[in-house]
Amino acid sequence: MIRRCGLLVVFIFFAIAVRAQAPQKLTLAEAQQIAARNHPQLGAARFAAQAASQVVTETQSAYYPFAYGSLTGAGALPNSRIAAGALNNPIIYNRYSDGVAVNQLITDFGRTQNLVQSSRLRSQAVQESVQATREDVLFAVTRAYFGALRAKALLKVAQETVDERQLVVDQVTELAQSKLRSGLDVSFAGVNLAEAKLLLVQAEDDVQGSFATLSEALGDRDQLAFELSEVPLPGPPPPDLPLLIGQALRERPELVRQRFNQQATQKFARAERDLWFPTVSSVGAAGLTPYHQKSLTDRYAAAGVNINIPIFNGRLFSARRAEADFRAQAEDENLRTLEDQVARDVRIAWLNSRTQFERLDLTDQLLKQARLAVELAQSRYKLGLGSIVELSQAQLNQTQAQIEQAAARYDYQISSAALQYQLGALR
Image (tube, rainbow, N blue to C red):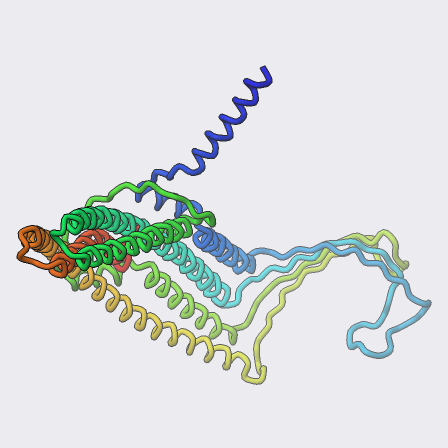
C-alpha cells in the first residue's frame, strides 16, 4: 500500500510538471480578453476614472447643507474680560453647551454650476482615457500575437533550410568520396549548412523572445509557451483615405478625451469669471446649555443670511480668470495639434497597410521564382554544368524568399491592426 501511494504521488507530480510545461492554447480573441481583464495598465486607468468620478461628487457637495456639531465648555474669572487681541464681544461666560450649526449656499450666480460641469467633463475625459488605454493594450497584445506567429513561421523556415542543406551536404560528401566532386564543394556545402544552423538558433531565440513579449502584453510577468491559432487574412485596406481620416477624427478616444478637456477648461474659465459675483449663503445654529450662568438661557437658536461681495483682492481674481482663459486657449491649440497628428498617423498606417497587402503577392512570386532557380541549379550541378557556388546562391535566394513570404502574412495582419487602432476601431 505504501509503495502504491508513493507511485501515485510521483505520478501526480509528473502530471503537474508536464501540464506546466505544455504550451497554452490561445486564440487572438482569447488573448485580447485576457489582456483586457488582467493588464495592470488598464486596471490603473479604471481606478483613475473612478477617482475622477468622485471629484464630481466633491464639487456638487457645495449645493448641499454643511452641518456640524459642537461641544463647548468655558470657565472664566469673575467679572473678567478679554482686554486685547479681539474686536468681538470680549465677555466670557462660565458654561457648557452642545449644539448644531448648519451652513447652506443660496447662490453664487453660477460659479458652482460651472465648477460642477467642469469636473463632470474632466471625469468624462478620464473615462475616455480608459478606452484609449484599452485600445493601447489590445493593439499591443494583437501585435505581440502576430509577432509570435511570425517568429514561429520563421523558425519553421529555418528548420526546413537546415534539413535541405543537410541533405545537400550528404549528397556532396558521397560524390566527393566517389571522386566525382572536389573537397571544395564539400566545404561550400558545409558553410551553407552552418549558416542555416545559425539562422535556426536565432529563430529559436526570436520565438522565445516573442513569447516573452506576448506574456507581458497579456499582463503576466512569467514567460509562457503558447500554441497559437492562425487568424484569417483581412481583406485589402479601404480605398477612401479621406473617409478614414474623418472616422478617426470622430472616434479616436484621445480626440474625444481632448474635446472633453477643452470644454472642461472653458467651463472652469467661466467659473473663474464668476468669482467677482456675490455669494449668498444662510447659516443657522441651535443647541442646549445645561450648565450656565444666570444671565444665559437653557437653550439657544439663531439664523441669518450672509452676502459676500468682492471689492478688492490685489487683482487675484483678475489673474485667476486670465490664467483660466489662457489655459482654455492652450487646450484649443492642443486639440488642433492632436487632430493633425491623428490625420498623419492614419495616412501613414493606411499607406503601410496598402504596401504590406501588395507585398503578399510579390513575395509569393519571389518564392516561386526562387524555387525554380534552385531546381535549375540542382539540375545543372548534377549534370556537371554548374558549380557549387551557383547552387549555394540559389539556395540562399530561396531561403530569403521563404523568409519574406512567411513574414509578409503577419506583417500585413499587424499593419491592418495598426490601421484599425489609428481609426479608433480596435475594440
